[in-house]
Image 1: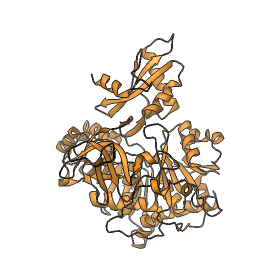
Image 2: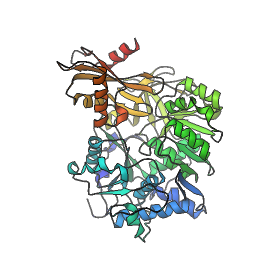
Image 3: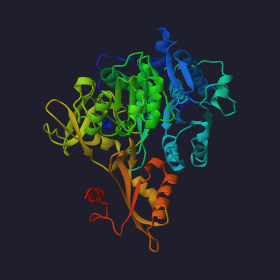
Image 4: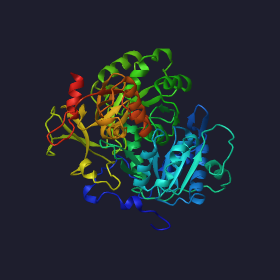
Length: 542
């Protein structure tokens, strides 16, 4: 590592032969020297948009001018006070807010690589991410510092932890508070002159094993999703107000609630509480026009949607899990709005198959977003005929590049990104979701790896063996169900079930904990001793 640039991420990119084929964005020619923040902020300031609203929350409203000042000062603090050099990885931990959004932009403006994490993550999960990405600096919302501080002793690369506060007025400044540093920082940081293919984001996904995979994305990637899905499917204008529930730590939320609105010169409403009831209240109060959330949230909203005025909405995007046709039809009946379904992935950064308006076919995910290609392959990598089920394979201006991970060769084959989803395609080019071809459980839009939950359960002294599966759930799409063999002498009781669920919540993020626990005498296994989770799913269905 030189004093001017930390090449850690570049040095750990997949080898050229295992990277996906990248396509050009139709009608776009990006400069070889590019910092995405200049395109999202400086561009609009130069065109006289400075007084227009950029980010807001129930307690805050910043114009493009005000956001530019904050981002530039925070970037200067990162460089001159905290010692961040281009290429350093900076972990962000916080709830959705204008402050968290500004810090995303500041890290990238300074030349750093953002590693954003959900507030729900616990110590062990944070330690794994910090060590895998060799995080040098962390910036954390003040009341979430506790879990992060406990990581210091196990994370040799972590040099500093700085706090921030979400506030609407004066704040009592502390020595380790980023606003305390910014208050005495008179310099504005110019955007680091990065290359368009310079990494600026590592998005971690657990996948099917529970071992985090870091998906690397560049400045060009962040613009590409704005100029494909957002431009062609959403078609936003500068008068739009975006809102939604996904965390900025998810690429779904990062695109929908930060990148897309700023690329269009629009505004984003960032909510700390994105639960369905709170989201409905925010829609009535602030009158947003575009909403992002998951199918299970839309279904939950239907229970009380008539109690709120949501007539300001003109487009609603659904992703994170398959959208049931019943949810689409009921939402249309009640609101008159056609939910825009879409499939994306952390590896691809955002949505690559979708449809809007009259192009929507209920039950179908949609067609390939302009700029992407998709097909269906069999196990040998051959394209299958229309109507046949196989592996969904995608190419586009974005693609999978894992941080130093052998699983790269599983996701990328012959230039195609293999998502792990079973799909079919009809003669008109519409893609129809069938199932996941792995043991990943998608519950309320969150991805939960069955082996990770099993590992947490096995840490409890009462558990001898266990197996975790996802089972259909009307409210969540799927819920997490655990089958447990108890150790000798332990008695199965409702109290023990509750204890085991609570135990999991202390080891890993609470949303990953089982909703149901079943005590059994044995588990179905193959001749080689591997769990047959499909047998448990079939047993539940029966």
